Image 1 (tube, rainbow, N blue to C red):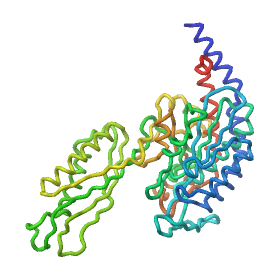
Image 2: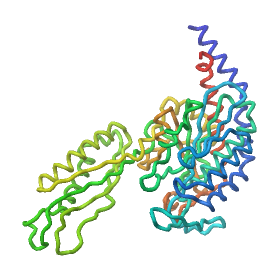
Image 3: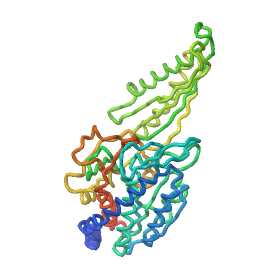
Image 4: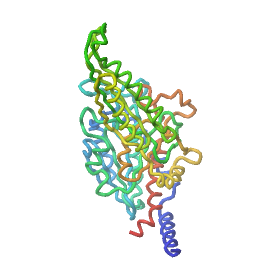
Length: 436
């Protein structure tokens, strides 16, 4: 036993000594900062909606090919996968960035402000990188360049995943992480671990935040159709009012949250965002339709919530003489950070951002389809600060808004994080690799 442990420690020590140190990695990343800004601002000025990132994909693919990286295009509609085979043996590590923009009109007065419009579900809409995906692409392009320049020292294989439609594909189209997985983004070579990041407009620039286990919520969208009996508004007793039944259902949904969910374990959110019913003020209609979203941070709670919602909706409707049906469509899973992997890799984040700049954070009820990748292989998803130094987070515009703003002067911290994760993961997994 002692002999085996000694051999493993020797392999780990040798791997650690053989790889470039953090100072070398970080200085290489810092040297790329001007290019990171250039790429990011070009992408910001030329945003494209989900499953329509044609020019973005071309821009990325040309960059990767120029670096001598193997490139697969049109994975998951417009996705790009780059494969860098390092000069040393080691695991297969994937790094992921999302590419799509949103139908939002930019209000921030920038020299590289977006004035782009596009068609979305039959309408002409303004398009803006209102969630920072332009910074994600820039950071991953920079990481690819840094690692390609260090190819002889790179252990194993690095897979660069540039993903379309993270915000959801339009209409009934397939897209996003599920489609990229379906089309082999995690195969050939088979990925051992995956890392992803998200810029945050309300986190101070240069900081990194992370959380083990559930870190971002699952996102379920639901539709409830209530059918009653139409009647004159002056004689409600002659019919069954689907609007009143809908109100009772909405109240009931909130009692599931407040009285049935173990909220000390993880938060739960049910929100009805849309109700359609009726045509005139003096006619009680026959039908009403509600649409909303569910957010959970624990997979078993998600399942339990779905079951309770289905039971409650039909029972309340029946109690009022109506009928109701509910359909729940899961858009994303819980974004889950493997706790063992997270504990193992936090020192790599510290190398990138510095002592005191890596902080444990709370979970968020926002959702990310990176969750599909980390459901297939162990993964870590972390947050990178993009708020200007000294700004009050409460005054910083949130994501998905016209005033969303990112300070791009420290994007190299993201490159440092990705690169250190690649090298350190390989060093820490070296004993297992040796045994194989």
